[in-house]
Amino acid sequence: MHSTQIRKAHGFTLIELLVVIAIIAILAAILFPVFAQAKEAAKKTADLSNMKQLGLALQMYANDFDDVYPTIRNGPSNWGCPGWTGKLGDCHQVNSGHAVMDPYVKNRQIWKAPNDSLQRCDDVNQCTDDFTGGPVSYIFTFNGQQNIIRDDVGDVANGTAFPYGFGIFGHAWASTNGTPNNRTTGSFSTTAVGAPAQTVAMVPSYVSWTYWSGLMQYRNDQRQYAFTELGMPSWPQFQPIPFAWCCASDGFAFGAYSGKSNFSFADSHAKSMDRTALMDRLWLTDPATAKANHAKNLIHYDASYK
Image: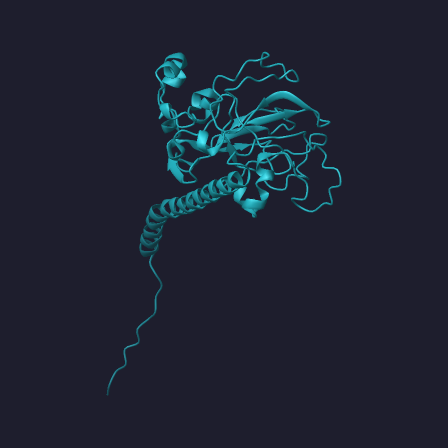
């Protein structure tokens, strides 16, 4: 007579469960940072593509306008957006640098950096974001080397240029009623830029008052783009400046991915590098000597600073 042995089923022991949980925890600890790095790398690549496309759009714009780059602003502001229909993106500053490039860029989403989550503050009367139409994460370098008169602001004496405005895009000032005045600095032509492949045209700057229906921002002191000591930290660090424009959440940061930033150059190529590579540190510690010695400065339009 054959006997049948019945094997009793049993579950995992506590020790076995703890071992499995420990293995899963170890794998998660290893893989999660890898996933985060991969996501960050993908955003950085998309950002680089945005800057490349904007660089090409700048070249197309210049080809249609006697080889002269657009201005950061050219005309009066358009606050309140008269005639706004409520359609997202319908309201914008027609005289702003990003707006005049609209026919060449086509997709306004290109102006937003993939990791730019900074809240924009738009309507200066109500301080709401009803009219943002999307952020602008990339800005032109400012040409402030020419004589400027800003009697509406009073922060620059008549006939005095901004000492560190050595970019290539001008700013045409105008009163709110559109009357031209002499508070103007012009944009350079493509041929006036000494070393296009070594001259930065656009930088990533996340500013709470830079948005589609607002005016493209810039810094008078463009050393801020290179040195955090001058008050513009690298993203995701953020410099709060409550009510600098109209909101308690106002502030800015310099766009970055894992410590590196993407830049668009005057010849339309884009490149990722450390922001400190923009210029010699002498521009921060001893700017007079840096200027006299033509120390390295990739924002400067003059080839002798390369």
